[in-house]
Length: 114
Ligand code: 5GP
Image: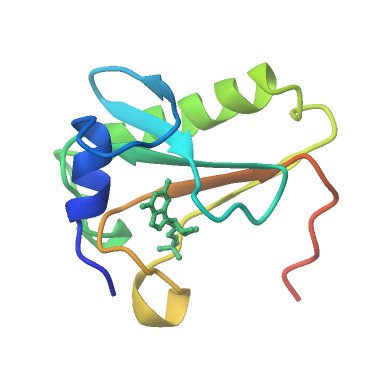
C-alpha cells in the first residue's frame, strides 16, 4: 500500500491534480487513472488512514464526504442515471493508498459487483 503523502500533497496543492472542489473539511479531485467517464476521489482534509479509523470524533466528516459526493454527482449531471460510491479498506478491500478516500464513479453503465 502506498503511503498518505500523495493525497496530503494534493490537499496542500503541492502536487498538480485536478481539484474540483475544496472546503474546510474535504477535497475532491479527478482520479489519475479513471475507471469511468466520471471518477472523482473525495478525501478528508485531516488524515484518516482507512474506514477502520472512523470514530466518535471524526464520524461527521464521512457524512460530509457523502454529501459532497452527491452534490458533485448532481453538478456533473449523472445523478438521474446513477452512479456508484465506493470506499475500499485495506488489502482485501483493494485499498492502494493509505488515506481514506471515497470514489465517485459514473457517466456510463457500471458493471455489477458480481
Ligand atoms: P484505492 O484502490 O486505494 O481505493 O484507490 C486509489 C485511487 O487513487 C486509484 O483509483 C488511483 O488511480 C488513484 N491515484 C493514485 N495516485 C494518484 C495520484 O497521484 N493522483 C490522483 N489524482 N489519483 C491517484
